[in-house]
Amino acid sequence: MIRAYRPADCEAVLALWARAAAVAHAFLSPEFLAQERMDIREVYLPNAETWVWEEGGAVAGFVSLVGSEVGGLFVDPACQRRGIGRALIEQARALRGALDVEVFELNGQGRAFYAALGFVIAARSIHEATGFVLVRMRLEGGENNGQWSTVNCQWGREKIIVDG
Image (cartoon, rainbow, N blue to C red; front, side):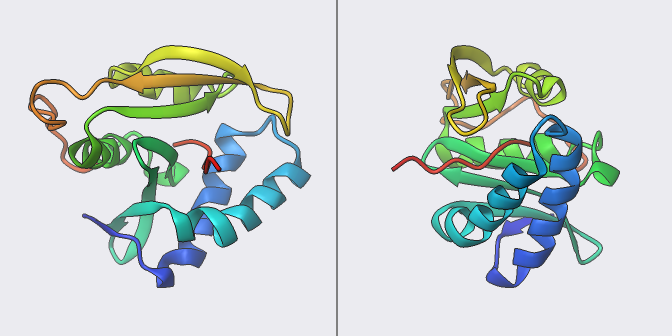
């Protein structure tokens, strides 16, 4: 089930992020990932609107929104390919309509996931801290006020960014 993030979820979200980032961002240095983990705890989670997928009392995925930007979407690797990520994006789209996300170009699985949901490439840039290429992808809101009418999920991944 999807529910709002609570501060008590912080350690579970950080542990899930570390497991998922080890797979999706294996090309990033351990030092960079350690700094990201600290930033997630101290900057991103307190400033983003975050929703979690809870299953059996455990957090299995989360999406963090900063405005219409998907700042982070991560699903525990043990729970992937069950519709959790799709359901979390559906939740984000229901709240915001059009969505934007930045994905490392080397994260092929993440780019393919977003493309399968209808996101299209809008721009490319260089991530300053790592030198890797970021791909900005956009999903338009549509005429149904951001609601997906064709998604049939039994249930329901990327880097957290805060501009400013």
